[in-house]
Picture 1 (cartoon, rainbow, N blue to C red):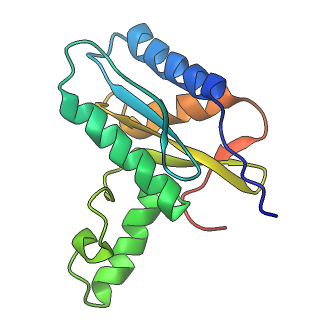
Picture 2: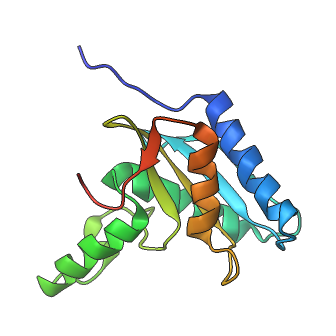
Length: 151
């Protein structure tokens, strides 16, 4: 039997609350945040008022990618760079239009188990997507972390 561990709706909501709270605290213009389970399916997401829907879609694609690859999107960029050296033409070679190399998606682990992913879109040079997503990881509490690359 295979046991499937995943973030809960309550955990996803705490991530969203923490990330949106941080954006409001620092007076950020707005962001979108998405939390997916280990299978890359949406648990919860939110887009702040006046943010274009493309930010929500970008956050979803980032979280999806982090869950599928079981690594942060920064790690996917590193992986992609290696693939490009081998002659691949781009993410279109991966046969999945949801995959992206945009930064800001974090693969969430509890212990050694991948339990989902968090992603943010809409950050800027003052507080970027990665930093907002880190706020989300911290909201999960002790025992949760993310990984840039496969351990």
